[in-house]
Structures are given as structure tokens and as C-alpha cells.
Image 1 (tube, rainbow over the protein chains, first blue to last red):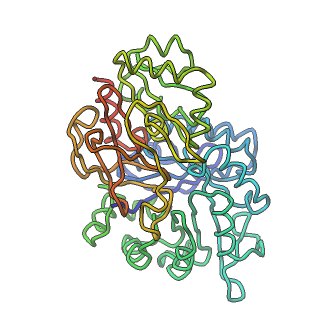
Image 2: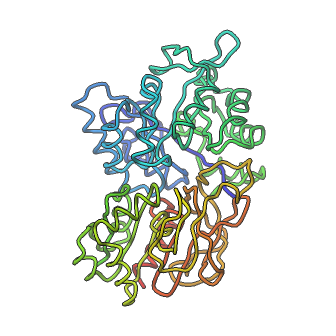
Image 3: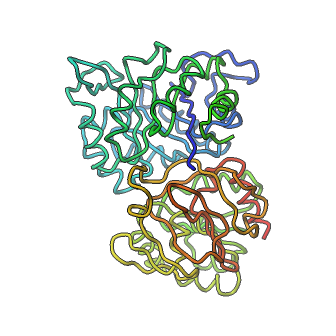
Length: 252
Length: 202
């Protein structure tokens, strides 16, 4: 049977990991390559990099980070952040990314999903969505959660899949950063309409939140989190042991 | 020297990285000459079957691969590269493959239960059906990374491992010196690296 994936996510700016970490067992916790290899060795099933570099000239640093990571980490690498064109796809894919996630770029230009999945295959096109409850419905937000696009979530999920997205990352703005667990209610709705794997993001504050996620939403493929792993509150090894003891299939 | 066949499909960078990691010398090329003279050949591939086999043919590499396989050069097809080793695929109408392993490639849709997502994506446990070749050092239950919407259907004697996804999926195959994995060994952690290592040791 297919196992549930545990995916740590790293925000990278100007070639450095953004959020501080307090790992004691790695030399430079600000180095994305070191942190990614640490997660690889701890059993991460996939690693996500979000490049939040603002300036174009510094984007080269990110390409370098990717290349170095790909030579040390032998699980899928997903890359997102500022992907707006096929050229953006090309750059990260050539530097070692296996999957590319599109967010605001796809809302602005939905055709990007069609073009990229046609050229590179659906397996590497991930539609990443930030969502928040507005007036009794789930609304799609862009620009890092600052802008209400007016799109309704479930119809955007369906449209994205029809256009060729092979996987979906769902980040709940309502639960993100609150650390009180994943947005079960919203994820249940999405899993019902999605025919491709769905990755849950936003809200993990403790290991038990992942148990709740996989038990309450059996159709979810993966749980993604950043800070609880970075700050060492939960290690991937201990999380996977807990999940297995709860009867949830994971790769150990 | 191992040759990774470059025919303009997919990302070969991580495959090269994984061979570097296990200390195997390799080159990425589309040169018929270099492929003919290499000790071992890896045929990667992602995307659509027809597109990939057409690209291979347009470079004349289909004949080269068949010729190399016939003279006994170990050949490993990965993912779509494995699917191309078979007789034919039903992806976008019937399309002929390299015909190095008897069997056909068909879509998962209709074969697996409807409630399961397609592609079959993620880490799945292997059931070892024949403990040999590149699967020699792999234990029952070890997980590898899959991402595919089509699968190979062949006789049991060519299948060396399977995975369960609502139905039994062909995970790896062998026909003499011709090997294939539906999963991506280069993305399957230490287990995947061991499979690639076994290939280099053949």
C-alpha cells in the first residue's frame, strides 16, 4: 500500500534558509543544503524549497543551492516561489528540481498549468493554493496570502486538475502559524473533489496533528510543515514512529 | 562506463547525481557511437510514451538500444524508459515499443479502484517476487518512489517485484540482460541507490 508522505518545507531567501533554527547537530542551520540533507537522513519523503528571493540577480544563488542539494538528497525535490513562466520551470528543472509548484502565477495565467504539464508532464506540475474562509466560502488567495483573488477554492482545484496539475498543495491561511492542527474541515472538502494527490499544509504544531490529519482525512497523501521540524520540536523519525504505532503506513 | 541515454526527455541531472554518489562513472549522451561502446546503458524517461519513443527513433537510438541489448549489454529502463522496453503501449492510441520484453503497457484507469488517485504517486512498499538481478539486495517491504499513470502488464516470469495500489502493479522487470523499474531508483533514497549499485555491479 502507498505510504503517507512527510514533507518538510524550507523558505530560502538569497540562498539562505529564512527561519532560524536551533538544531544542535548540524553545523550551519542557515544553509539550505545542510538542512535538506539533514532532513533526507531523518527520513523526509520529499523536500520543498520556496524561493522567496526578491531580486533577480540573487536568484542565481538559489539555482546553486538546488544543484548542491540534488547531489546529496535522493528523494523528490519540489520547488516553488515566483514561478510565472515556462522559463522559470526550465531553470529549476535543469538545476535538479523534480516538481515545480505554481501558485499566484497560475491564478494570473491559468494557461501556465496547461503549457507546463504538456511540456514537462503532469507529474512535475504542482498547483499550490493558499486558501482562507471569506463570507462562508473558501476563497483562493495570492501574493503570499495578501490578495483575495475572488476565485472559489473547489472550482479552482477542479480547473487546475483539468488543466493538467498532477498534485495539489493546500495551505490553509486560517490555520497557518496557529499550530493547532491542520484544517481538517477544508481538506475533507478538497479530497472529495480531487482526483490527484493532495498535500496538506498549514497548522501542524505537534506530532499528534499529523495523526489526526491522516485518520480524519484518509484520502490525503501527505503532510507538509516547516517550523515544527526546523525548531526541532518534532523530528521526522519520531513522527514516523508515532504514525506507524497508530496504524498509519509510513516509510521508515 | 555507464551511459545515460539523453534523447531530450526529462531531467537527467538527479540520475547523474545518484550514479556519482555510488561512485559509478557515467556520461549523459545521445551519441550512437558512445552508446554502442558503453558497458552498461540506462534509458530514463518521463512524460508521454509516443513523444518519447518518437524522439528516440528520430535519433536512430531505438535500433542502437535493440542491438546493444541483443549482444548482452546490461540495459536498465527507468519509469517511462522501462515502459518503452515492452511491445506496445495504449497511451494515445497503440504505439510500438522496443519489444525487448514481452508484454504491454496500459493505463491504470479502469485497472485500479476508482477512488484512488491517478497518478500512482508516492512511496510504496515492494513485494519481491524474484530475488535476482538489480533487486538482489532489496528486502520485502522496502519503499521506493513511484509516479506513473500507465503500467506494464507481462508474464510473472519477467516480473521481479510488485507493489499494491488497489491492484498489483509491476514494479520491476527483467528479461535476461534487460532490466526495468517502474519506480525512480534515483529518487528512492538509500534503497534506490542500492538498486542502482547492483546494476553497476552486474
